[in-house]
Image (tube, rainbow, N blue to C red; front, side, top):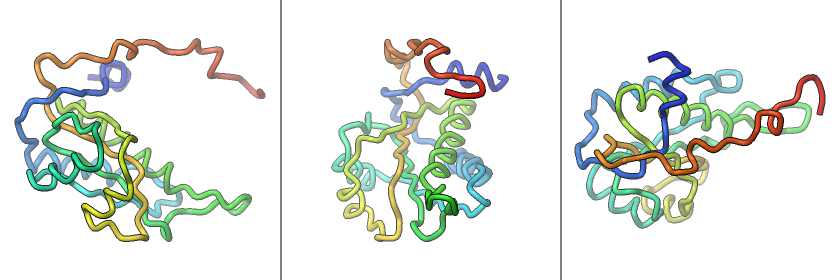
Length: 172
């Protein structure tokens, strides 16, 4: 599948088969995450793989948007390791984590593994349940697994704003 078709066909999966994702497939997804570009290649991301039943139960205490997925990855960044823009002090780490998350999400889809990018989680509860140290900042949660047979995109999936609303050439 070419990239355009991959990106166009991917959707947020909210219904999963109970089948586990293999360790080999998880490792491949983590390698894709490791290949993602980051500011000055500082790689501030830290990824927590949540796959054991006890850990998945803890995850359910942190978000209602778990969709009973058999796998989740919490993408965080180390607060002291991101690149900082000298002009205004902006840090690249949250963007870096978003790029890493996108690599995992698209790579998973190519492998037949669905995912849903979840922002609706309690970061403090996540810290408590998974012993996340203070220097790590949770950014994104990907719940993942093989889509169930009845999995379909959200009805709004195909809706997009007109291109002229989101793109300008040369100046705003």
